[in-house]
Length: 423
Image (spheres, rainbow, N blue to C red):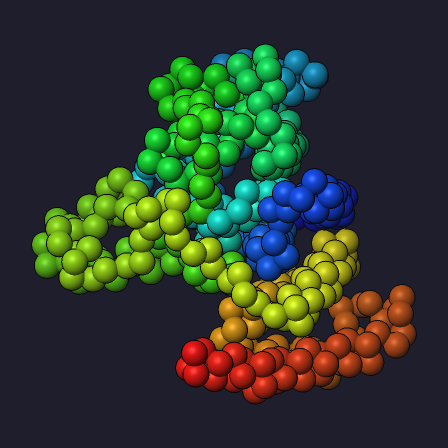
């Protein structure tokens, strides 16, 4: 946990800087496709995923270390060659876990968040799952275990392979010549994120594109079919925690309502999007049928709300950075209390981004929880040792955040609804 937190401390500002550069470049060439609200939602999603991983809130039924002890035929020494072998095997593992997440109803729930943005930019690369609490696919690393790749090599290579998937989430890089035959490029990944019928469930590769070509899931980006992004059952929310459980909620509802016991059981393992017969008519859900003609979500927010949302995500990044840099010093069980505060924070301000009146409840809860931490400990998890006045700063911030939420709910949202009614 601590080592991964240190890695993220380095990676987070780099990702944020690249997102800002992409935004500035888009404005410069008059092709800005990095809406601020969408980016705040994406970055918030990345934070929930990172906090979950750093806190170790997931289980692995079959660990790599156990497989290594049982099936290793060789024992590779740690070297550059060993890392190269591990990287290729992890990319093979990544292709199949990615493909299964797209093709099986239950597994789609953990991956839908990544596709939920109706834009395609570097920020949307950060939309990662918080709903996956069990790793079921470690067995796909059996080739590495047979070869005797050390566990430490796998542990180091996994985050490197993940971070290398960041750069190709952009519309500004067009086709890249001969690299299109070797690596996953922005062109390939635009196809993967598109909801055009000819593009759905294509290009699952993560670093090397030849996996798709070998296993029959490759599709080139076509000039005649501009990619349209999102998911066919649009999320209709900026709240990353809501998005993480939307598909699971629908599966549970459909399984409960299904009259056929076979449907109740098999719905989880059917192809993604499958529902029992006639459910689309009996229990309709919002679905995009014309990919070139639908309204994107949340495009009419006020400048005040957008500015406040950006401020909230930047302040939350500071809270997250302090946690990642001080995991050992904070210790158990306090890191989980801190993590809960962060989840409530993100849930609260993203509910406000959705213009929900109930966001006032969540912000009040966050205020009471944060003030309770200050009162109980008399110290913000050791930060006072470096900044003696930090209690007053955090208390003032929590109060200001609550008052801003009151302002938006009582005044701005009410005015907006009255205008809609009168129109």
